[in-house]
Image (cartoon, rainbow, N blue to C red):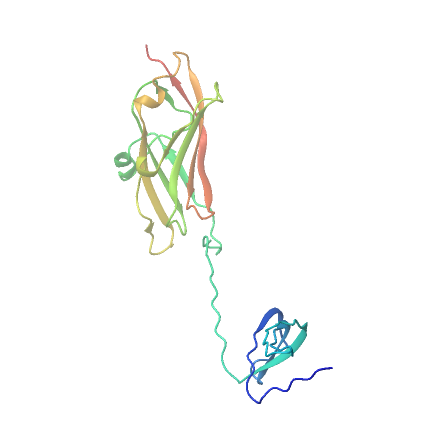
Length: 232
């Protein structure tokens, strides 16, 4: 076998490595050790002996599994955690508020000793403007908003009449200094356009007055029935 002696010096080579797995073997603060499994391919340079000087480069492959351990000095590892809060629900207990709906405007309800008629059982003329007002009492009323919904009993598929948001004028809670009971008052109206398309016969409707905060608290404080009829 022919032998070729190489002079002393560095021989260039290229090594590529794919790290397939890393596992933490010890606590990084002791110091830590990380074990990695690497698959490596090594290229080499050589010469072939011939009659005349004939340098030739060739590549040989070497594949295998290399396990190595990396030691880290004690230090601090920083991590970032992102959290998204969808909503916050106040879970502290509070009794549901109580209230009533009246067939009167708010100015009448605010008069001392007022005896405004309850709305349930009312008879309304079709196409009339009908002012309504409400009063509720309880605790932790802040954030609760009123929504009035009424539906025709003779036509379940008819669109309900809904009063909420800017259609409802509502006061901030007023707190009694002695009892700590909060009071909220407000008003809205059934507009002529809400009932003018009704038939000339009597139409009976059901209604609910609810208060909610959009975060899970929903209270029905009043419900009942009323009738709309044609005056002509």
